[in-house]
Structures are given as C-alpha cells and as structure tokens.
Length: 369
Image 1: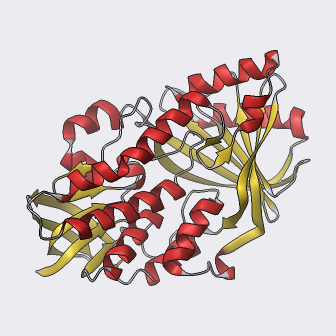
Image 2: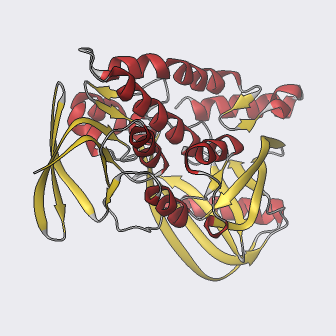
Image 3: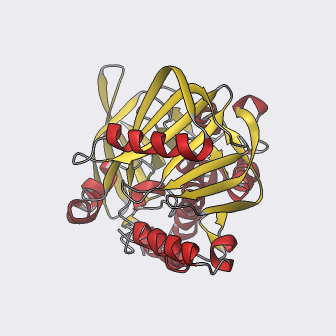
C-alpha cells in the first residue's frame, strides 16, 4: 500500500497543472496515467496565448522541440456554409504544439511521482480518504490518499463512479467521437490560422489546419451518423471554398469529446474528490479545452491546499472559486460577442448584415444542443 496526500488521474495539461500546484504547496502527489508517456493525443495542438501563459507561469517556457510547424497561431477563421467568413483572432499569438511531447514535458516537470502505463481499476472515496486499485505491468496494488483530482477526460471513470446518475443523464447522451484525418495535399490557406467550418448539416463545428506537409481534417460523429459522412461533407465544402486537394495515404486518429456542459451541466466532483477539464464538462464552445483544463487544474489544487485542515470538504471551496469561470463560459455561448472561449468574436458582433445574423443564429443553435 502506498500513501500520498493526493492522487491525480490523467497526465494531460489539467492533471499536470494540478500535480504541479499541489507539489509546490508541499503535498506528496502521485500522477497516474493510463498510457505510456510520451503518448499520442488526438488533438490539433493549438495553444492559445492565455493557455501558453498558464503553462509558462507554472513550468517555464515551452521547449522548442514541443512545437509544431508553423509554430505560431494567430487565431481561427470561421467559414459558414452559405458564404459567411469571419476572423476570430487570439488576443495575442498562440502556439502550435505536439501534444505527445508537451504532455510528457509537463508530466516530467510537475514535481509528482509519475506512474504511467497505470490503469485505475476502481476507487473508493470517503470524507477525507481515497483508496484506488491500480494495475501496472500485470500487477495490481492499492494506493491511498487524502484527496483525489481526476483529469481523466471525456469518458471520465471518476465522474461515472462519483456521480453515476449525473453521468447517465448528461455525460453519456452528450458523448461524441472525433475523427482526425491527416493527409498530404494542398489548399489555399494561411497555415497560421485554424480553420473552423459551420455546416448546415452535420454535427458540431468541423476543423481543418495545415501542420507541416500535412493537412488535418477533424469531424465529430456519433453512432447514428458515421464519420465518413461527416468527412465527405467537410471535404466537398473545402474543395469548393478553399481549393482543397488531397493526396497520399491518410492517417486516422479517433478520440472522444463531451458536450455535457451545454445548458450548464458541469460537475466539479464531490467531497475530497474534484473533477477538472473535460471530466467536469469544461470544453469551450468551439470544442477546445486546454486553457480550461489548465485553469481548473490549478484552481482545484489551490482549493485543496486552502482547505487543508478544515472540516469542510474541498469541493465546496472549489465550486465557489470556479463559479465565475462557469458563468462566463455560459454567457459567451449566448452572447457571441467579445471573447468567446479563447477567440475574439467581435467580427461576428459588428457585422449586421443578413448573412451574419443568420450565421449567428446557426452558431447559437450549435452551442446550445
């Protein structure tokens, strides 16, 4: 049996930020990661200036070997079927990163004991006591701690065990799959801008980008509508709009995303177990989550540190401190003006044309279902 002050599940940005903040506060921490590091992550790898600042404050400058080509990102351009095109810049310069290398760098520098290739099979949570059963290298063992922070993503086991009814009602119905296809080709596009596409049909907002010699196409899908239909629609649209020409063998990566926060269905955990990042429903309207994962990981760790020695369990303090962030995310989905997530949507608010009013209505519908 191993004992720690805190167990952190998931070595993504949110989990690493939580582990670093707790370690800096003097806690003994173990960071559990299911995959072996470095591991691939199905993600465009765009880090906003706000997220980059959070990383640099806690871990120092992002190493150049963690950066992709091109390194800098200016924001996103939104293409709407029917003609509307809008620039949604960052408030500064963002970065394009290789998530496998960035996450490994953050885990190495988080100050915790890192156990990768480690699957959490089950855990029990009492008022100030956590017992986790883990499997690693074919052996099972038990880990004990006073606190738990779970950053285990869209299909969070921690959410399912902590709040089974919430998980059934809100997480499962809003779970989507994301297919990322990387392929050679050409298109008429500035590689320093992400591409977002709002189709009249299809699920969510599709994305495209240029990464070195490859073009990335990302679509959401579920069991009722497969990724091939979504990808075919996106490809046909981009062929006509930006001259997309694909060639060569495609590489595919699949991941999950969870839009349970639509309508305000966040879940920050219970008692001494806190949820951060996408496990809590923290995904911005455009589908990006790195900044929110970093913010919630830091706030969760600070809430634990501040509540140490108190009789009140830390999720009360965590909920209070996260309230402003949650209210801001919900307001941005409704208003579509100023900052929406990490992007400046002023161009959407300023244009009063008929086409833009129609596109704003379509975006609101997508952000609310």
